[in-house]
Structure formats: C-alpha cells, structure tokens
Image (cartoon, rainbow, N blue to C red; front, side, top):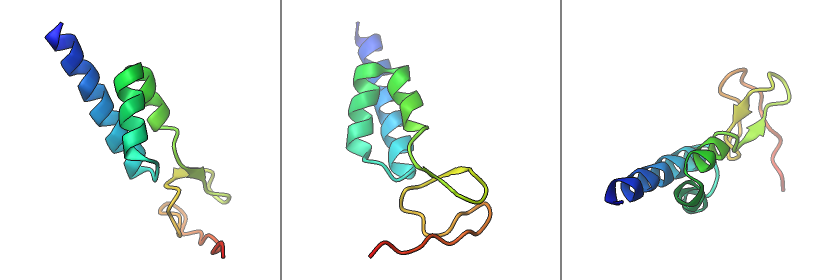
Amino acid sequence: MGVVVFIWILFGIAAGLVGSSRGGNGCLYFLAGFLLGPIGLITAFFEGKRCPRCQKKISNNAMVCPYCSYEFKSEN
C-alpha cells in the first residue's frame, strides 16, 4: 500500500513540475497528478499556447517563441 501511495505522489510531483514549466499552476497540476496518476501527468503536457507561426506548444508566459522567434503582442 505504501508503494502505491509513493508512486501516486511521484505522479503528482512530475505533473506539477511539467505544468508549472509550461506556464500553468503547479499546485493544480500536482493535485491532478496525485488524484489521476498518469492521466494527470499527460494533461500537464498539454498546458500552454500554440505559436501562430510554427504551431508548436509553448509556455503561456512566453513573449517570444523559442522555436521561430515570433514575438507575441502585449495584452494591455
């Protein structure tokens, strides 16, 4: 039983790290990874926005696409 809980905690940590590195809420993704396991981890990989030029997923906080150098307009 303890091993199963440990594995689900690892899924939570991994989902939190992936989600926060992509600009999402790390605590929310930790909770999703802990409760949903591998499904929560997979959903963390879909966090982010698409670049309109190269169509790759990037962080929500990105101002410039790291792949094609497209500059996003400031939302003021």
